Amino acid sequence: MTKYDAIIIGTGQAGPSMATRLAATGMNTAIIEKNMFGGTCVNNGCIPTKTMVASARAAYTARRAADYGVMIDGAITVDMKKVKARKDEVSGKSNKGVEGWLKGTKNLTVYEGTARFESAHSVRVGDEILEADKIFINVGGQAYVPPFEGLKNIDYLTNENMMDIDFLPEHLIIIGGSYIGLEFAQMYRRFGSEVTVVEKYGSIIGREDKDVSDTIKNVLEKEGVVFRLNAECISPEKQDDGVVIKLDCSDDSKEVRGSHLLLAVGRTPNTKDLGLDKAGIDVDERGFIKVDDQLQTNVSGVWALGDCNGQGAFTHTSYNDYEIVAANLLDNDPRRVSDRIVTYGLFTDPPLGRVGMTEQQARDSGRNILVGKRPMERIGRAVEKGETEGFMKVLVDADTKKILGAAIIGLNGDEVVHSITDVMYADAPYSVIQRAVHIHPTVSELIPTMLGELKPL
Image 1 (tube, rainbow, N blue to C red):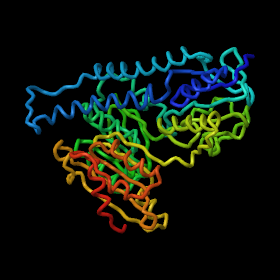
Image 2 (cartoon, rainbow, N blue to C red; image 1 turned 90 degrees about the vertical axis):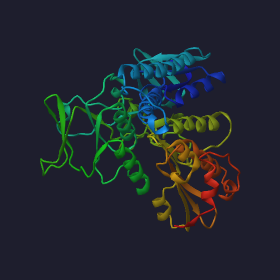
Image 3 (cartoon, rainbow, N blue to C red; image 1 turned 135 degrees about the vertical axis):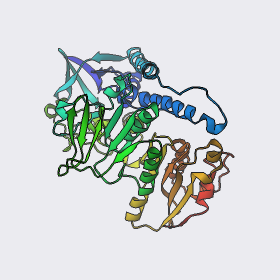
Image 4 (cartoon, helix red, strand yellow; image 1 turned 45 degrees about the vertical axis):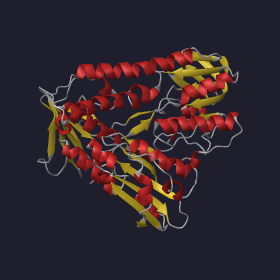
């Protein structure tokens, strides 16, 4: 048995920063990685997918060149092998960067292998047992594979092995009309595939307001993505060289046929084979590790960070988990998860930037609500760039004058939303940003204008 001051399991977003911060204080620290350094974001999530989104946008922009007076002779083609090679290069640099950072850190030992708890404060990696008073679980998540009948007979794809293909599917069927599925839908449509999105419910990205959902659906439909909604009885079958998806168990005529199937129906935590029962660590019914407001588990000296704790499913929330734990443990700064404001993006084109409450959540709260809304077609920067799809919407508490939430679907929406996020963190009234002078011509300059036109919801 090898004794350490601290052990971190997993090198996803929160793990390396936690490990190097502890090591810098002089703690003898170990970090364990069973697969690829950097976790989901670096290897099959944010970085590689957004690199491919950029390639898809380049193809889309080239096809629209004539709209801007730029003439391109010949057909626009996409070389998927080169697309993948570019993605692999960008992602690989991040992967190697994380590995080199960790292996070059003083007081930090890197173990490569699968970690399993032997007890509350001991972990087995291969033939070795490591022990520490402080253990930080950062094992992330993976694509959820639903128990569809017939799925075992099909070579299906997930967001993970989708990163391995270097060809263009003739007709890609995507089960799941939410964030991951929609990004892949637009991406592969722009590359040249036929794309059909199958969604169980009557609208896509059901957690969003209807105007947001409808706008994104309309954008993708204009580009040729087909949606099959209300598919409550989904049954995949292998047929010839492709796949057929039955959409209604009582009507065999309702189906969609394609060449490849991508499952994008959610994520599940990587906690099943971690030996949490031997450590006495509690999980919920979905396998997420239960934590308190400062990310401690029910076992003293054990914390859970990142996607495996169910407190967020994003790279930015994982990193904030590290900040919260480090602040409490090392800085005497009592930060809490409940202080975090929900914010995230959907990286379709145009992107969605979201913060705080949706309109429905604001209605359900019983507050007196003011709403401001401005279509992108009334924003000069969007008109100049020829990208007028979408709108900006902000929700304000009429009594406290505080911003409750916002949705910006449109040009640079994933960046513009941060100006609203910062005001919300400052707990300042909306008038602070309403009276600010923003640069012209930008999308952000219309936020003060929109806030000056608030109306009762």
